[in-house]
Length: 160
Ligand code: ZN
Image (cartoon, rainbow, N blue to C red):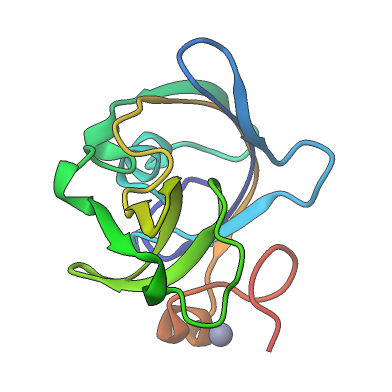
């Protein structure tokens, strides 16, 4: 079956940086299952999958602009340690949920100097082109309920 809007798609993927470093892979796990045409995966990958068929294998190079976007310098901020209420040890690499200007997001601590903590609200993959190695495992019509919910149910999807 061919991928079109409101099909339920299952894929195996391996995601690498341009230098070949593997960032993430579904190999050895359940395939990733998503509802096509809803923006639930990055736009460049959704576009690359559109019109493909069950069993297709392909590679896609996605520019940062169609993946996690550019790096915004103003999302790097120095804040006071006091802002981390109740956390005694702030360390580089820690991640926190925070309300940033674009809405709720995750910030990463990138430096700690005395009372000053530098946080980065950019997505860790922002500014980076991504390479996907894709195999399409299954394509089926989504149910009316799945379309209404905006996600798929069952293996690899939501269970509720
Ligand atoms: Zn649901």
